Image (spheres, rainbow, N blue to C red):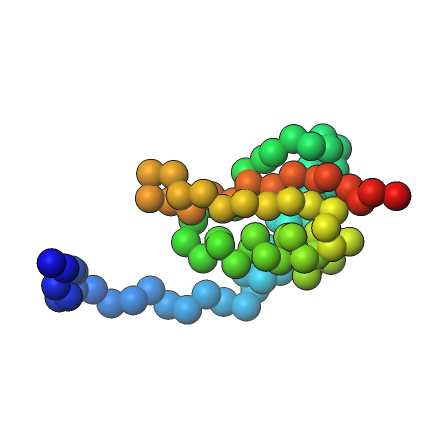
Length: 94
């Protein structure tokens, strides 16, 4: 039976600054360009907590870097307790 309790006492880190969004958009653009250069090849685009949301953003082309919707595939895997996002460029059927 699982019981709840305090695992560790510590202060949470400060909230992420909005400037990180700019860095993430730049990193996404670089990753999208690199994936387009190797169609069909899977690559790790993000590792770490909070990465799972990016899978939907990539698949649906919700960010400019990942457009048009459906041009990229993405999956999330947990490796050694760490979330890892893999993506690949598949293009669109004409």
